[in-house]
Image (cartoon, rainbow, N blue to C red; front, side, top):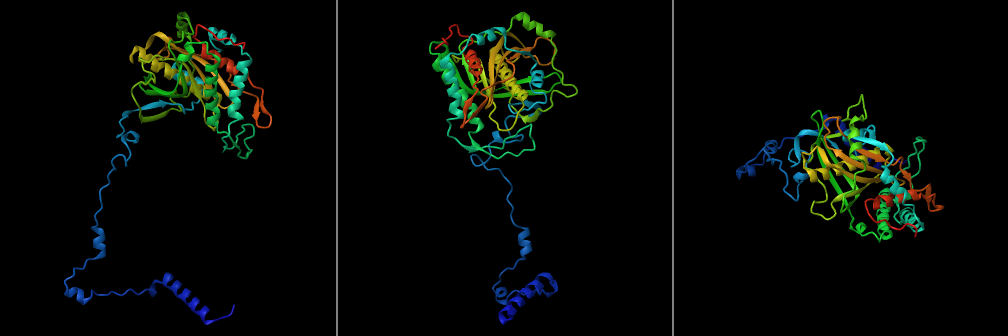
Length: 418
C-alpha cells in the first residue's frame, strides 16, 4: 500500500476518534454563560433537567369501545363471566390421563363393549347395496383424491420410528379431510333415503352447550363441549336399556384412578358461565338430539382413548343440557332417560357409540349411573389412499353404521338393494 497524504489524514481522523471515545481526559466541555442580549431582554432561563423532571405524565386509561378491549374478552375481574370461586373446566381440548376411563369417572358413566342389542340388530339389517357403496366411496374420494386444495402439511410423526425426520409434503389439510366427508355422507343419506318423510325433518347445525355440575368435595366442574354437526329429530330416541337394567347399574363399580385424583389434567379458571345452554329451543319443531358428530381436525397426535373421551364428553354435555331444559336445573334423577347416538372421526377412522343419561347426581358414586355403549375399535375408512394407486381397501362397514344411525328411530326403512 502506497503511503500518501490522504491515507495519513484518514488514519489520523480514525485515531483521534478512537482517543475521544476511549480517553475521557481528552473531552473538554466548556460552560458557556447566557448571552447578555438575552438577559437584557428579560428572557427567563430554566435548567433542562428541572424542566424534564416536571414534565406532565398523563394517567393511564383504557380506550373506549370499539378501539379498546371489550369486557367480554378480558381475563380479569372486569369480565362479566368472572367468578370468585375457581372452577374446573372440561372442554373439547382436555386431554385426560386415562382417556375414556377418566371421562367415565367424571360423568358417572359405566361403559359397555358393543352397541345395544336393538341398535346392533338395526345395523346388521342395513347391508349396503351397490348404490350405497358407490356413494360412500365417492364421498371419500371427493376429499382424499379430488380436492384441489394443496397446502404444506406438518411433518409426519411415526411412533415406531421417533428418530426419523420425515420431509414435509403438500396435501389436503386435515380439517378438510375430516369435515367434508361428514357433510358429503349426510348429503348422500338424504339423497338415498327420499322415501323417509321423517328423515327430511332432521336438522344439521353446529352447536355448543355447557352444563354446570357440582361434585362431592365441593368443587365446581363446568362441562363444555362442541360438535361439528348435530342431528335433531321430531321424536326422541327410545331408551337403549330397560328400567330394570338401569337400576342394576347401582351395583356396578366406577373406574378407579388411585393414586391420581379425578381433577388431574383439568383446567382451572375464574371465567365461566353458570347457565346451561342447549342450542335448540323447546319451541322448535326438531328439538330432540338424535346423533352427534364429533371430529378431530388437528394435526397433532391424540390417542384413541382420548378421542373417545371427547365423544363421551359431548354426549354427556348435550344430554345433560337437554335434560335440564326439560326437567329443570334441580332435577337429579331423570323421570325419563335421555338417549342419543354419537360418531367420532378423524381423517382415517370412524367410531360409533350410544349414550343414555339416567342421572345428574354426580355427588357420589352410589346409585344408578349413566351408560355408554362403544362399538369396539374405530373403523378404518380405507387401507391406503394416494394419487398413484387411488383408494385401496375401502371399508363399507363405516357407511353401514352411519346409515343405521341415521335411520334409527324411523318406523319406515329405505330399500338398500338398489
